[in-house]
Image 1: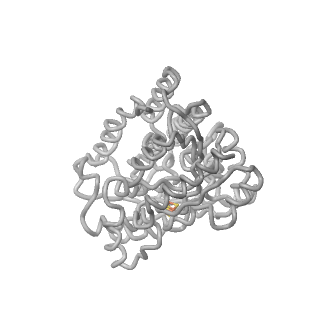
Image 2: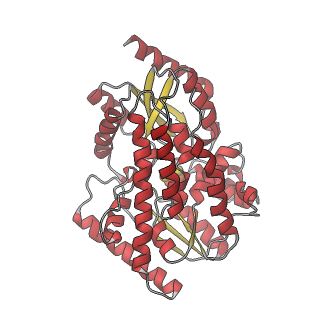
Image 3: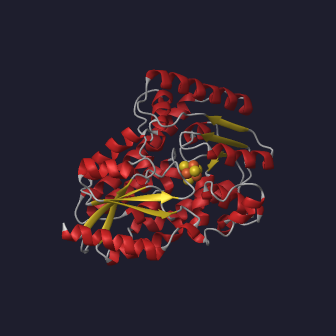
Length: 396
Ligand code: SF4
């Protein structure tokens, strides 16, 4: 039986301090997308709030589909991003899981900043709240489906970032403090490196932790990226993993998870896999927050790191990435989550599982679900298909 890592117990206080700091309203608040320019916003003195994290909290704590109809009545299709529709719906219904931190509603933004490297939905989502709160909306427009990160692309994106900096300077009435930016970027880089080191410790057999731990433990590298608190947290986490004995578990099968988590089913799935001696050892999702900002001037490094994330890349790039990471973690099979409302983080629709199977010999399983809207996931169907995969693996 794998016990949760003790350091996980520190998360409640860490995130509580983060949210209570925002509730104190001592600093202006900027809303930011999860792979948006959080470091830049912190350098301009903003507290940074991440609506995607709020969407995940709604998905994890409440029946996923509860708030979505309110967003549909406002004109947002129930077939688009359920982080967005659950978040907008909860706002319209005056609900938030942040009530636990003393908030009556989501923190009011002074500014909203997105990066379309992950999808265009974030622009529409932030646009709704920019209109509601009458706050400025700024963004970086990153192309998608990228084979290579070319010098021409980087030149274009550098202009996008420089334009954003100018707009932030105009709004704040002061120039970017380059030293502060460098300091924040170095914290961000340190946290990302430590997070990656932690994930890589799952090269061991049996794996000391699983994907279902990762989706909890990743919170600081998302919402506290750029702070020394995130760096401290991951140092402690790694110290714990290095010192711990191998977990007393039977690990018959190791699988890789591609696509979004199903937030409202994490506990169920964790137990399901544990009962069958299956370790979900790594995921594309967990590895998405391993940005590399190394170097002197953080701006070029950041422009590149935020452009080259997995989600913005072509199918050919993704195939090579999946071949390498599944080999590195010794995966016996790959699970592809086809998330109904997130086509951007779903990699099943253009033959990728079949090509991966052909090139690696690894069995793959595509299953249907969603990040928040549980109407699209069937526990029974998932169990049947997983059992069939396990039989296939055992018969191999
Ligand atoms: S990547 Fe998917 S889950 Fe994330 S904001 Fe975009 S549509 Fe929503």
